[in-house]
Each structure stands twice: as structure tokens, then as C-alpha cells.
Figure 1 (cartoon, helix red, strand yellow):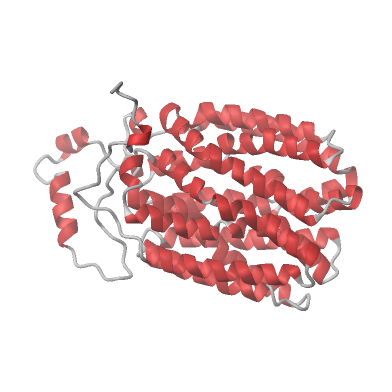
Figure 2 (tube, helix red, strand yellow; figure 1 turned 90 degrees about the vertical axis):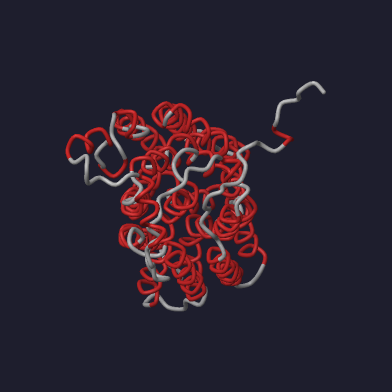
Length: 430
């Protein structure tokens, strides 16, 4: 629902708003950029609150706010009002009510199978995005105002009941991640054959692992202050700070780019976006499963390289016959990257502070997240072939992420200090 109405649904609103209000591409792209700025600023706070209070309370707040936001969208008649509703209600609601709390819950319930879990979870975004053409048809038939109200009511009617099944951690129910058996039950079943945690760690350290295989060593749980003192944190930050420009330009500008460059009808252009997202579902699930068995850094680097190459190819598109091929290739590679973020974060930093660490990492994403949608829109408004130039530039930046992720090194003991920097420590009165 978040995907079809909010993430990719923005593209369904984009063309009707331009036709009715004559708002510029740059102004509309800036809304997404600013919403991501807001999301990045809120991310450390929401991540901390979800770690502390669990996802259900935060999702209740967030989805309630999103429903109000879509209903309020019905009365938008100026760019200023759109900014207020989108940023003040929809964006904040999404930060607390959709992706982040669900990823935190999934990361806590799965360790060895986290790639599969994240792949299936993030396929929800792909499934929703693949249906955005239906939302576009609804907008075309009943108008964007009525469609916005319908979206808000559906989020309340379906989303709020779904929250009741969410649980934060398996330990809260006396369980362990991946369905493992608690130690006291293992001891009763086979006390003489069950290896200790220390033995498992020693055996894992001694294994000879090839460069393409998964690292078998157990995860280490780092606090946020330990995490930010590792090279892995900053390499991961650079990786996704660079990649952060890609989601914004695909959700906002892909359909308008195809509509303008190939003279496609509105619904057909949005259908191409839906096809892209549908292809990404196979990438999310397929590469999510693969991530449980191979070197996660190497897999991420290969996927980033494919994103860079296919995005460049997209910038060269000339005929309608090329659209399905490029959409599928780009969608598979892009979809594969999406679940890797949660997998990489758990792989490097563990589960204990998953939400807080993720929030700080998203904060580092802000420059590209904010600038990319506005910048691509600005190029399209001001430069001949601006969309093509912008896509080529983003493809080049993504190649930087390929290098950064390969330099990330998994933290091992002894770990950095968990003491907060002095600026965050309370004044002792001296």
C-alpha cells in the first residue's frame, strides 16, 4: 500500500498535477527530495524509538498520519499546500509507519535467513509498484482528488488491522531468530552434543572460506557509537549515499521521461514504471535468497555495477521496442539492491541497535536523496535532453558505490568504544 499510493504513486499524480496546475518538473521533483530530507532527519529519531518501544506503536502513529495526509491531499490547490501536506503528514507518517519498522522487525526475527526475509518483505514494495498503473487508471477515471481520498481510506481500513500481527523480537515470545531452539531445550534434548557459542565461533574462525562464499562467523551486536567508529559504517554510508539518488529519479521521473521522449500516453508511461517495479520483485526475492549463501559484499558490488550499466542504457533509449528489455534489466538489478541494505546492516552491526544504526545511515544519505529528484527535474526543464544527461550522471555516481562497498570490512573483536562522543555526553558540571 505504501508503494502503490505513496512511493511509486507519486508518479501517478505527477502528470495530472502538471496538466492542471502547470507546476514545473523541478518543483515537483523537489517535493520528493525534501520529503527524503525530512525522512533522513527523522530517521535517527524514529529508528531509536522503534528499537525502544517496538514497531507496532510507531506504525499506529505513522499509518494514521498517512491516512490523514491522503485525505487532506483532496483539497490541495497550490504548490505551497502540496508541500505542507506531503511533508507534514505523508512523509512523516511514512517514516514511522511503513518500511523502517517492518525492516527492524524482520532483522530481529532472522539472521541466517535474513536475505530471504528481507527479499520477501521488500517485494511488497515491488508488488505495490507494479500495480501503480491501476492507480493511474483510477485517477484518470475519477480524478486525482477522489483517488487520494480512496488511498487514505484504504490505508486505514487495511493497514491499521495488519499492525496487530507485528512483533518486535522473537525473544519477547521466548523464541530465537530463524526458528532456532532455545538453549535450555537443546540442553534437555542433547546435552552432550550441542556446541557452545564459543565453540561455534572458534569453528567458524577456522573454516577456509572462498572469496565468493558467505562469511560463517556469528554476528556481533554493536551499539550506535561502536558502529560509527568502524570503517564498515562509513563505507556503507558512502555506498548508499551515492545510490540514494536512484530511487528518487525512478519513482518521480521515469514515467515522465518515457512519456516525453517516446511520446507515450499517460497510462502507458505509468505502466512502464509498473513493469519496472514488477521486474524488481523478482530481483528482490531472487537476490535476497542468494544473499544467504554468498559473499554479501561481492553480491552487492555486482548488483550496483548492473544498476549503473542499465541506468546508462536507459538514458540512451530511442524506440518503444527497447522499453521492455531495459525495464526488465534495470528492474532486476535495482530490485536486487533493495533488500541488501538490511542484510548488510545486520551483517556488519548485528540486531541490538538495528533501527538506530539504520537511522544514522539514512541521515548520511541526505545530499543525494534530496538533490537527485530536483536536479534531474531541473535539467529536464532547462537543458535539451536533460533527462538523458541526468540519468548518465547518476549512473556514473553509482559506480563509486561499487568501489566503496568492496572496501567495507566486517568488525571483529576487540570492538571500538561504546562511549558517546563528548559532544553527546552530559555536562558533568566541571
